[in-house]
Length: 387
Image 1: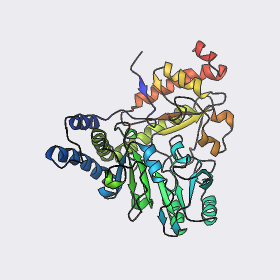
Image 2: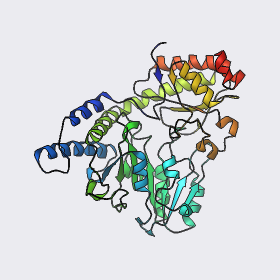
Image 3: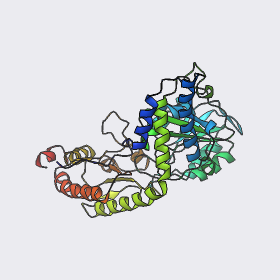
Image 4: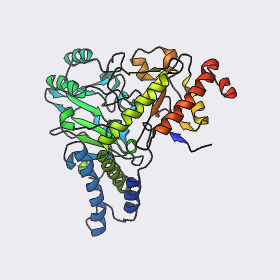
């Protein structure tokens, strides 16, 4: 079999060479970044250099960046009741229906304090419903992601921020899928708290960050003990991981304009080819989306069988979010969009990255044409035996 093709970049990305080199160099250091001797200062310098790069990438200053063990921890740290909003203490959480599972879980809010913001059939947050929810209670923390991990839909974050702030509330933006793929600025977004993750941009797994907007009160730490991260997150910093995060962010941000144009063209090529076969439907194609993300289905398609079929052809794809212990489960995103269960169960996600080529896209389309002739007739695991 020819070399495999990886089209599951929204789940995780390959490690960038720059990140690998930075991590290897960091592993040669012995110092604890909290130590004051020379060895400790060298380790501290690496973490602070990475903090500077990430801060610049979001248009803020380094002291506003808090390193965590990943995007999930960063989200939980952000979703904290008791934050001071302009209209008073935050007592409730409003989350869009298409948020990542770590946000839908509500962080440290009681389940009774969490309300869901519906979305349109295109997967865009319903601004009218958000306005009504904001007016119907005490100050809230509103959680609306920058870009959806399944459909790639870009949310109107700046419009959401204007509504949220007019109501005297705060806005949290999960930018994990958007950071490094599209230009972002925390002030232009109007976000009060932003979460990002290293392994979505070519950095290592197990490193993330919460970025605080200017003037936002410090969230209550999830992990308590030492005074690391300015007292916001206890525990010795993952120096090698943070160094890799910074290097990956620098590389992604340096190439962002070129990659945006190139990946948009590849995505459009991919979707044009999909639509030529078996009445394929691309979800949210009428909304602004990430340049690298396609979620599609076809009548009679079953996602689990399709994912296996692509895998047998040497192509890694997914059925949506990669946060379900490897299981293919119904998509809460498509359910929120009002997609019927049959179509939702057949949704397959293709996500591209910096090393994806036209040849990769063409091979994927070739595999899909072959798969569609087989899977759409059988529609179950027995079809793979004929494949």
